[in-house]
Image 1 (cartoon, rainbow, N blue to C red):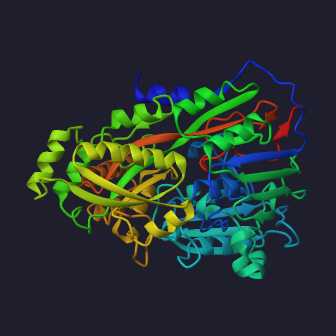
Image 2: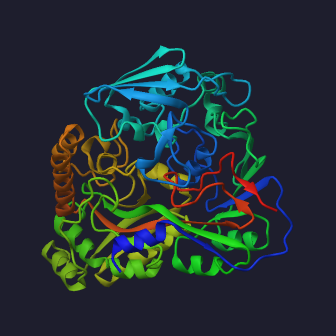
Length: 518
């Protein structure tokens, strides 16, 4: 079966057991188990981790959104904005807003000034992890009480993609941010269907229904978002009925096991988070391309896919995930060969092998991947020592350029420019004033990445993106491993109100339509 056929079959997979339970209805409280020890930050313009992005998704709105249950930009629809127009050259966009959007709590009506404040905050590197994405925006203005005009320096692949409630597109309320100050990072205020109510570190976040939500008050009245880092403990809590929805362990055996729990639905959904091994090209011995190529030859993608499960994993070839606009598989490949890896190490002056170091998260799904790669590398006399830290600490330390090797698992808005810019453009190198997530210090494809952003001919743009991917692969800035599709399960008495095929925020959308059927 081809990769496309596997993806087509999996993106809409919703496995429901035919068994039912006699459990009592859960009422109007939704209990969720998330696979991490704690929150990183709940500031929507700073949060980068999967657990935080999913939680914020239920509290925030954007000017536009992707239809719940979908992940592709072809399903973009109005959210806070009722409509929009663009100039012929694509450089000026005018958004007409709804006038009935209320900020959570006592912060009042949301108007154009709040949207302008939010997007400028997202574009400010002092207040946003995603500022680099917004550099093409030359002006963001309130041109009416409920009208926002955005002007671009040049055409970009998808302005609307920057305005969905994901990363910098989350709209916040100016009065709330200014009133709360530093407390905003643990007390987020938005306009979405659910409102922040309580945070207990390393225990839970509690949300309550927003009675003023512009699409209507949610049927679910409370969400308890529990931090349960142990996969086994999370599964047991689900089976015991203590939680209604769980974040799954990212492997096939989990899907097979949890789908046998009576009264359970399991979703395997896109986008996949692509696991990539980033090699810091400034740190010996990784500054030698022969060593980097040796590492590439020592990693067997087929083994890694089999390790995680062919039904929940897609092998990765390019440094841009398959399915993104601009992806190509026409890149240099390094076939699995322990012998070739050893030969390259010897050529580089390391006949007895090398030792490299990696700081890594304790998040189980990612850690098992890194341990499997560690075992493969060992066969080629490459000793990778792993120092494990809590997930939020991991994100902090790798951004301080503290690790020779970085295993990063990520999904982004599905356009090649976003992935290439954040992970492989020199402006994004960690430790610099414009840092994003370029852990490898790669700078070989800047010209192509920049040219593709403003190229209006789709074929020429695709060619530039392809060349960028080829150069990055040739230099072995990073080794792509696979795409992990997103795994969630919930009680079959929970009706989300839509058909689940995917979620850009990597968690199911819990909207005003979600309800229990018993």
